[in-house]
Image 1 (cartoon, rainbow, N blue to C red):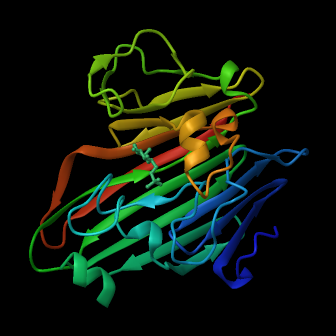
Image 2 (cartoon, protein in one colour):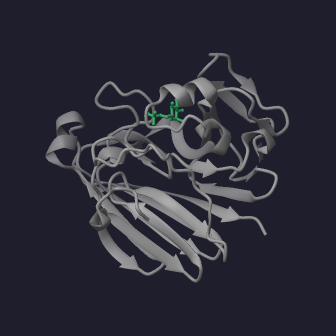
Length: 272
Ligand SMILES: O=P(O)(O)OC[C@H]1O[C@H](O)[C@H](O)[C@@H](O)[C@@H]1O
């Protein structure tokens, strides 16, 4: 993979013909390829910036300790713009670790440890999150796996499993409940609440099943034509080729007491 980033910052996973690539910056999963054709299932912007300063546009960035605008620090928190370390690895699995640094303590004065396990299985990618309060005082957070899924054509894409789910519409400010499958023909930015733990994202030729545990919300985002054009690190045609379906715990903040642990899991799996 030639992305213009330092190969030392990348972790390559392999299982049979399936591969995944993780960037230690932001613990961002850049690529997940499956099958003999080695088809890519994640969307990564061609204009993504790899300067280890700006969040990487695409793949699966790790959002913590805050989803959305944050009074204490950058939008979506610091985890996606922090350099994680590789704490354990096998050919098909990596455990990435993030703890407080001087920079994180300056904006968020708490000690923490996150262990993030990314595992390749046959036609599947599993992500397990273990967030630990290593401080002596409680703190709270929101968290989200900001998954950019590649689709062949947004016009033929649908998301199943959100029917009847209540959603917060961040663009129009009017909340509602989903009727039928989600189809996208304009900018969308919605937080679906208390969603099913199994969703299906189909582009007409391939279906990705999104499974989750302990992540009750699902954010659906596509910036559409204008949003793609005005986002400098997003390709102009990105809106046609991606949809973000993001499992998260973002509505109510999780409070962890000293020594407490929060565990959650999400998987992406190709439907047979
Ligand atoms: O541009 P970013 O900070 O990466 O955020 C990209 C998007 O992330 C989420 O999907 C939010 O719901 C959107 O409101 C936001 O625009």
